[in-house]
Amino acid sequence: IVSFFLVVKLISFKTLILSLPVWYLRFTLFNLRRMLMNKSFIIKIILLCLVSIKVSAIEKVILFGDSLMAGYGLPKEQHLSVVLQNSLSLEGHNIKIINGSVSGSTSAGGLNIVEWTLSENNIDLMILCLGANDMLRGIQPSETEQNLENIIKIAQSKKIEIILAGMLAPTSYGIEYKKNFDQIYSNLSKKYDLKFIPFLLEGVAFNPSLNLSDGMHPNSKGTIVISNTLKKSILNYIN
Image (tube, rainbow, N blue to C red; front, top):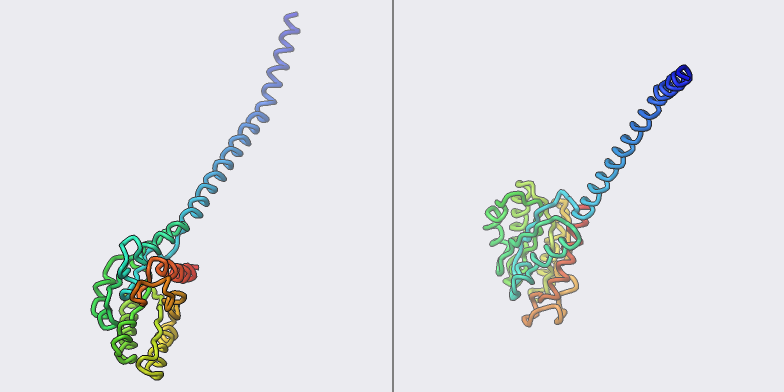
């Protein structure tokens, strides 16, 4: 009987010894599978974060213009910079919009303050739209063009990208004036290879429901239209 139990124990011990590599292999495979699952989970979390907050090379944008972009006649929460900022944020874009526009500014006025305005750290992109007040004052288009060109050169010297938004003149000063003025923006966009919005007020100008009572400045609804125009241009630039 003792011999029988001894044999059984020896067989059980031998079986245990032989099964150890199998159990070790199963344990290793289980840990490996769990590690891969965790890794996959972490990757999914990272991808989800990237989708939720869309990271781009453009993180700070400055609007550099006159009353058409400054929010003239509107409460702060309806200013173009705020509306555009909110619209981008709702779509998950981590882009800060700065209001660098000054009501009444001409191209010469913009040139006088551009160095100081662009001194803020880490500005990636400038949306430039000046010239409306030049046109209203009958300033020669060649002078406006020269001022805008100098502003462009200063921005580029600071490694700031530019989207140029154009304006269109009425025929108040004659067909020749209008022709020369309207060409300013397309000429500069081609010369400096800039992204170009042909007319900032596209879809807003001459529409009473989208303008203040003066018929020139966008109201809250008009600001939303302009914001969508700028947002589209910014996102096209990023992509």
